[in-house]
Length: 316
Image (cartoon, rainbow, N blue to C red):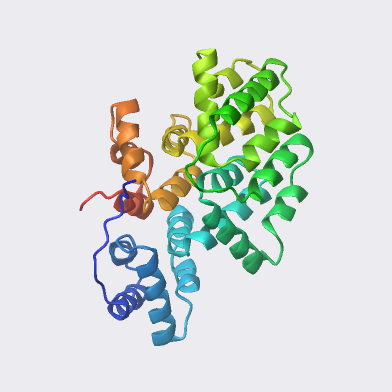
């Protein structure tokens, strides 16, 4: 996995905090200075800057940034500066609170993060909202979708690489029968997707493809009028099977012709910059014959654009 973030090996949190303070002073905010510092610091370094800023000025850096910045730029910087688990808790809460719950975000968090990281997000959610992530998911969804999302978000999968081939075959058959019968709400389907390790599930998905000559994700969408549950299952399987391909498509959809989905674009860049955004960029280029930097530059503007390009690893 290759990150796109360009951060120095050593930095002085105190100096960074002082430079940020200077950027807030005087006539108007010096956004360039904010981008050049925060856009080049990893999670540990950002946390150190927040602590140094608090010690030096008895002020919360996050609150100060919120008051100094605005629009998509403010949202992106705010999400970037949070600790990763806290950020995912915020992203989950925003997704849940939408008029129509954005189940993709809940699926990403529960199916892409490691079991330990998912646990950390659930703890951060408790801390921030004084409720559990699963009770909020349950309160804002219903029926089969609720069953699936609550099962995924409360999963604590085994993270090892061992697989059981016999099990892979029998569970590939169960999944195939459910798809054939359009029984997407079958409790066995939800059980398999929410309890098995990723390695075991990938073995089942591979077995499925070998036996049926078509990938399970393609087969799920053969039906043109697929419902929400079907789409959610499709997203969960793609997140487990190949997160990078999933994120490449999310970004591609976010910057399609009919207006940019800034929320989705910010989410992918901010959450993946320290993980695998370089790989996602390569995939994007292979798929679209244009670099992601170029596509983002074309669809965004101002400080927001400059900040996203910095996280994408574009050198000034």
